[in-house]
Image (cartoon, rainbow, N blue to C red; front, side, top):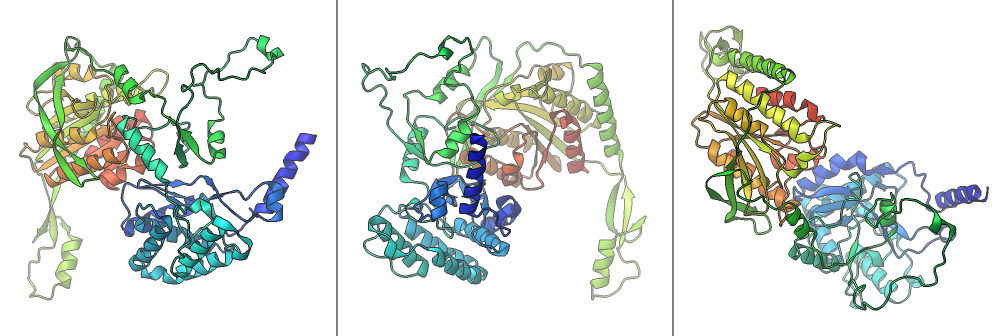
Amino acid sequence: MEEWVGIQWHRFITRAADGRDNPGAVRLEEVQRSIGLMFRAGGGAQAVRLAPANATRVHNQRSFLQRVAGSGTHAYLGQWQPDVLSLPPAISVFGNAAQNRALYLWLAALAAQTQESGDWLTSQMAATRAALRTFPGLQKNYEKLRRAQLAERPDLSRLRGRAAQAERAVQCALRGEALPDDRPGDLSQADVAPLWLWLGQPPAVLDAARKTKDQDGEQNGTQNLSANDRRRRAAQAIRDERNEAPFIMMFRAESFMSWTEFTKVNRADDDDDDGNQLNAANNMDELAIAPDGQSSASRVKFDLDLPSAAHDDLPLGLGLKYPEWDYKRQALVPEHCSVQTYTARDAEPYTPPVALRTIARRMRRRLEALRAAQGRVRGQTEGDDIDLDAWIRYQADQGPRSSTPPVFQQRVRTERSLATLLLADLSLSTDAHVDDFTRVIDVIRDALYVFGEALHASGDPFAMLGFSSVRRTKVRINHLKDFDERWDKSCIARVNAISPGYYTRMGAAIRHATAQLSKRGEHQRLLLILTDGKPNDLDVYEGRYGLEDTRQAIREARQAGLTPFCVTIDADAHDYLPHLFGSQGYALVHRPQDLVGRLAAAYAGLTR
């Protein structure tokens, strides 16, 4: 009973202190699309990801109820980083929903103009001026928000020392006045009461930790505790002193034995998931990160080392060199990646099961019907149907009239000039299971076989390649079928022999496929990319670096006259594929079992 009363009291006093029941509150999900449009329109980087912010500690003057409830010490404030824009999960600063929504849009416009700087105050002032120049229509809303923000600022007469200096500098900046000379040099968002109108920036220690992590080859940071948790947290680099004094025993000598010491239970290891990691992370102001002298990247490299030449696939040729895009320098690094083509060693003959052959026959008939369909020639003086677009243009034309206007369209049988290259991702992630019996690589293998059968029946030339990588010096291309090869038992055996590889250096693979497909003389050249995740590798090819290089490779393919299109089974593909391929340049398969049908549908739509 005591515990129940305590829980109810905590809920009551916390709600009364924080005023959570605000009918004008606006959630981030409701305006996420508008925020993205505002950020991109203001010149924000395409690769920046939007995420809900985590609660951060603030120096706030708390009310009596907040002190009783123990609340008011943390707030969800906007945070800007070069690759992530973290905004409050909900804004209820004002009682009016329109003002809360306007605050979200202002933060998006401000983020588009924010730059890295050691001085948080001056950087936000400069970003504010740039945002108002870029979006003059926001001036009226900004003035309302600024006046409301100033009205909520603490009374300077009640502050002392550093807190008074920091607050005086913030209020001067909000009014557009000159900054006082006694303002703290290391002023940050956490030093003052919640400031909703500006964005915080990561501390310098986070940049130092990132540089140290890059040099050590650690690209993934800490392990994901939950795939659904995307909040950004503050981190601080500390020194691990556990091994500084090896003769000091780090345990509590006064611990007593208890009854549970004699209970036979499975005791958890340090690496076991007890389900409380996320709660613990959310309750911490900063995550302390200390290097332990070990490199996870090196361990992964050892585990995924390449096989010996006697057990590896057979290399074809001497290999090729391709450039790679460095987005920080905005330049191509020449001959940066080494690409080697391999073919399966001793691929055993393969006879597909009856069910898969039935699907292949159905898909073959579908593509044959598509190829046999009649095309339409527009702008004819006579024909089967009226061309509405040509008729409207003719009626709008003020020139002389003709007795036989070219406003008809005629059905004719046309011959396609099409070449297709299918590039399949064979990275280690394809070893994951779709269900109890099927892996992702099995679904990809079936899709390649069905697609090969269908394209072989259509008569259009096609090629198939797989790819994976281990750093930039070992980008592996699996030769499955060339344009000049016949689709026969040897090709089917090579498709059946594919297995999960290593990592996904997609940019180099796309450049190699572009070079092969550009040699074809067909009018339409289609580059189909089949993948299950985003670009990644052991070195710097992680996060934005890999995305920007892949985007540049796709741009190069389009400039070469190719039509790149991606089919993916990654549930998070909407976060990054529009940046790479455009909103209409990819297709998401929600169930891997539907990959075959979705791939054929995408091909039919692109070649119609």
